[in-house]
Amino acid sequence: MKQNTLVLVLVAMLLSLYGAAQNPSPKWSAGVSVNPGLATQLPFQTALGGDLFVQHRLNNHLAATVSAGYTHFFEKDHFNGYTQYSSPFNVVPVKAGLKYFEGDKFYIGLQAGAGFAFEQWKTSFVWSPAVGVMFDNGTDISLHYEDFTGSRVTKQIALNLAWAFGLHPKHNTVKTNTPKAAGLWKSCGWLIDAGINSGISLNPGTQFALGITAGVEKSITQQLSFTAHTGFTHVFASGEPYHIEIVDGHYFMRGDRRSDHNIIPVKAGLKFYPATNWFVAAEAGIGIDINGNSAATWSPSIGHTLSKSSEIAARYERFGDNIGGRDMVGIQFNYRLVKW
Image: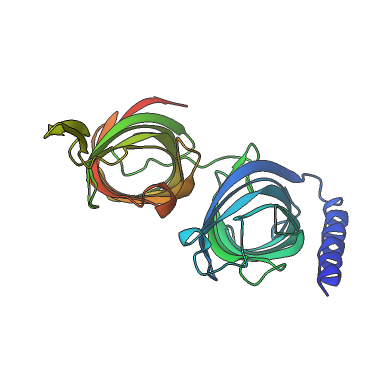
């Protein structure tokens, strides 16, 4: 049954490509995507992946897609209570499919292919329906369900944030609009920023955190932008530093200082401007500590644009249990370095 479904998808692609041969101006595009998701079954809780893709616009309603990437499923409590599993689910999905556009931007899609997994997990058939919207500047936002059929626990519901470089889905020209954020940049422009953040911990055993970030922002519409950031965050441990006390000629080690945490977050998300100079934003991704442990991280925020080159925001940031399980509340200051 799985093989038959894949054959039907491939046949549909071939027929569509044949029809596209009659189109005098086919549209090709290539791009990248980030896919944060929620696993549907324990022992996995969240997932994070990325893809490279090629899309061929066949006509006003149909596009063929091919993609390959990497996805990691994050387990709960190191598989506590699930002794049948011994390793996280790491998989390389390779898929092909179709998108059907209704109107200028909205579409439904279906991809199918193979997921090449590691360790105890085996290669399996994967299929993934989606519903989304593609903007004229190449930005693609969709919600999809992904089923790696080799196990009942390797399924997710994910948000797909994608950017297609070069050619655009329907038009030869790109519309440019001025966003509400004080006319900072045209909607076809990229912007590079750097920032510093500080915060306090809501968890026992830590006091505060200090970090730096660097990233990009891409305006999608007058009110919506795509963002992606990475950086370095140091979480300071609380408690009395270790020291030696001498009591009645005996040496005792005193203190209860816990270990500091050094984390590299890599996240992507969206920023929405409901009014001039004000925004709400959310990013999600993966945090990696210096010991090589990793976990999901996410951070909603609300902020204010101070000028054409700076902004300030209050934000909450959550780091997963594998890297300390920290909940931070703090302030983020960003400075816009360059745009193109």
